[in-house]
Amino acid sequence: MGLIVRESKIEDVDILLSLVRKLAIHENKKPEEIKLSVDKIKKHGFGVKPYFHSLIVELNKQAIGYVIYFYSYATTVGAPILILEEMFVEETYRHKGIGKTLFAELATIAVKNGCCRMEWSAFIWNEKAIQLYKSLGATRRMDVFQFRVAGEELVEMAEG
Image (cartoon, rainbow, N blue to C red; front, side):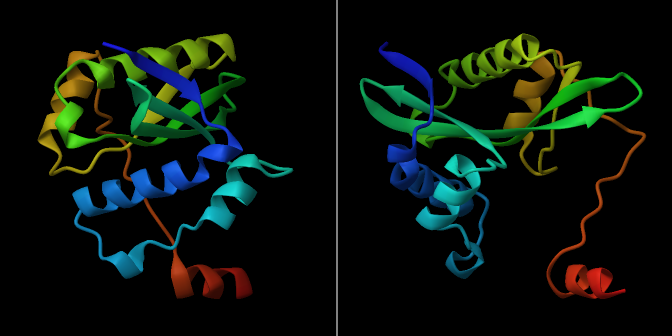
């Protein structure tokens, strides 16, 4: 299998956008919910101050998946945390070990950058992904809830 996992380049923005849209369909999102654009990917992923890093997964020189990740910081440990934001592999290529390969690549990146851990979220309905994570030795946190403020509530919070 000619599988390659590589860092994304600015020339990959159309590929990334296409794959993000495929993930959104998988997650049953409506087209109008997808606010990402080529310009946003260029600015936020490859601009002066990148907010995320990305990997492209290729099989026989065809893009079949991607990973988006960024870093946070564990103050009590004094070390960075690699946060996996999204991982997607096209359905045709799932259950072939590609997800495990991607996690191994992310773990390598995390270790190389002195991270104390990797973290990510999963939808509770995505049982196949959860089983993959458990098979990799990941544990589910039972002591925290994820919270979110978005849209008008975020603006209202900023305005006080």
